[in-house]
Image (cartoon, rainbow, N blue to C red; front, side, top):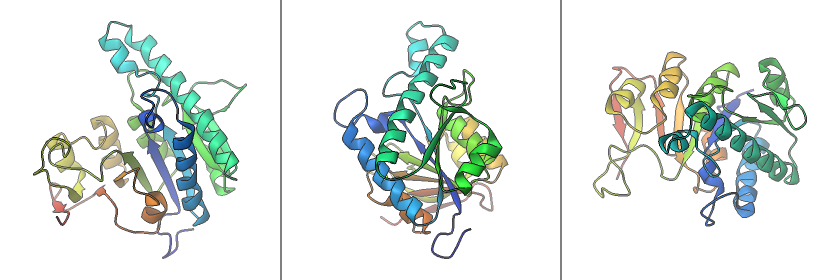
Length: 252
């Protein structure tokens, strides 16, 4: 259960497929996998139950393929299969690091993974296993961000941790605008109305409707997952705020 040392009992970590590329430009970098496994191990050892949703953009992104003329539904299913490849690679890295894991998928493929069954996933988490959730929701037109929000709500997670390449949510692209300001906290409605790239709008609205806080943080920030689980301030927190369009800016 949650303690003062670990205010979150159960977290869902959303990883992009691109996070696995490293310096290769494509595919999966084993060194990146090992580093990610270390991050999850540190959080797990602090007593936090960890579920993970992983994307497939390092191999195949359905929306991008559809923009180039491929049938959208076919492309999305291919993207879902890419997430399964990533999930199996992450499972291997986590188990080599000493954790027990289970992969569950939104599309049934019993030779390599369990189907997603909510009660079974919760039981795995309660037994101390890391549950890796692949193949999105199992439906085309839904992103892995939406899958992460949905699974986090279904599994009664206390927070959704969105790993990115920057240290939070900004009012402009910090890579292009040196005057961009980072939010320390922002309300769901303000984020939606500003069109901020927290998560896609479907995912963000789902979190809002179910009062699920989101912490957006830099995956390159060593120990960030465990630190956030301990209640340390990292990145940007998206949550219920009064009034709904409130913000709190990070110190420069």
